[in-house]
Length: 182
Image (cartoon, rainbow, N blue to C red; front, side):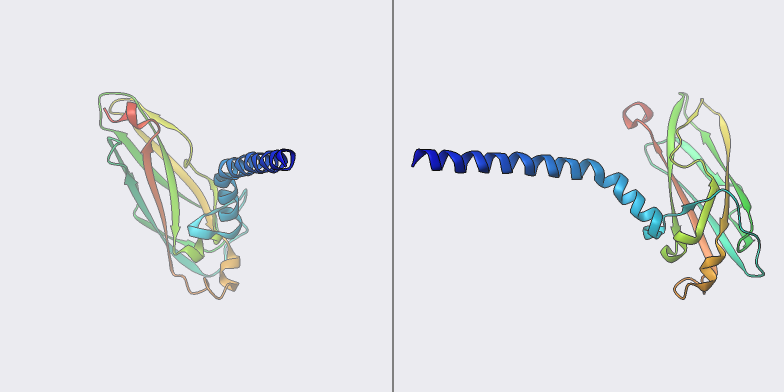
């Protein structure tokens, strides 16, 4: 009897260890898998990445640019122009500026989002400063370009074909809030 009970305990312990390993692996892989899923589907306004714009169509959309900064980051961050009208399929460029208003060097990184969400999979960035650490010296201002296009495939999507305005929004956060709060 003790042999059967011991086997059950060993089996239960092994299953628990396997379960813990599986859940740990799933937790570790969840962020990259979610990011990949969002990039493929455009979920939550996640943009695509591209190398070259396909070419302009006769349809235009307005792109509004939004800039935000975490309260923990003493930077001023804004688009140089609040909006632009672009031909669908044509390459376009926008500039944002960030100024470190503190007396210390500070490193920040930007995240982005595109609204409406159904336009996210058609908003394609060729070059962007997002997810790249930017270190600004005290009082320094940096000019950061975004090169993008709106994929003409949007015009054939019944959920996105009537989109007239797309908002590209960035938020800068401190890379190390403990060091950057100063």
